[in-house]
Amino acid sequence: MIVYYDNEGRVRHWRTSEGEPDTTLNRIEADVKEPYLYYVKDGELREYPPQPGHDWEFDHDAEEWIHNFDLEAEQRKLIGEINTAIGKMRQAHITALPGQEMIYTAKEAEAKAYLAEDPEPEDLDDYPFLAAEVGVTAETPYQLAQIWLYMASEWRTVGPQLENLRLALIGDAEAATTPEEVDQVRVAVEAVVSD
Image 1: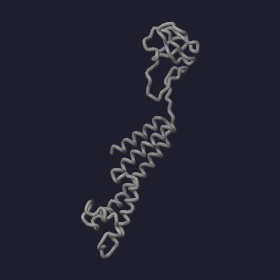
Image 2: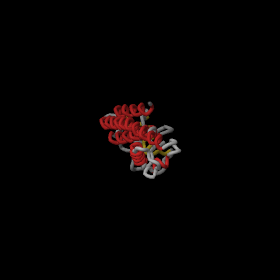
Image 3: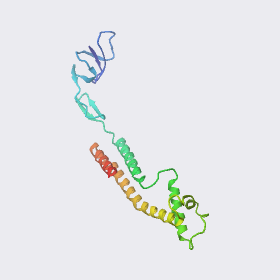
Image 4: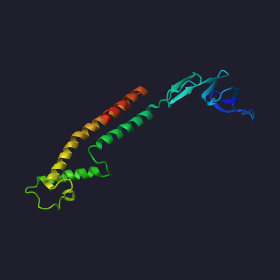
């Protein structure tokens, strides 16, 4: 078999018969079945050592695998993972739909206004969200307003905790400077999500 390789020693292609020679590359004759598993150094075909991972590149001069680590890309990816994880945790407490935040804000305002009235209003003309949901979530406007205020209060406890966690993890991701540190933050994110 004729193996063609570039000046760095990378095997580019091979042939089992002489055929038309490739004059743009170096060549060596070899008796191997899978030439792509080899490189050429000092005129001899050498087998690549096992590749440690997908983001490792072989340095043909040093004859070793070098970790090809793009810190900024890894940090961006990790920050995306953090935001996704915290987003999923938030969804355990709120409904994630476009405009839902505005609805929650309007419901809380209606609940406060309704409960502040004395005597209790006779109709719900001024409270469209209460009117739409009475009989679904709660039997009376008073009960529904209480539920909404309780949920808003719960969110004011959980929301800041999740935001603090998100910002802390992002800070850790931005402070990471090595593959190991990035992996440590990733493990921390996975641990938080699994709790």
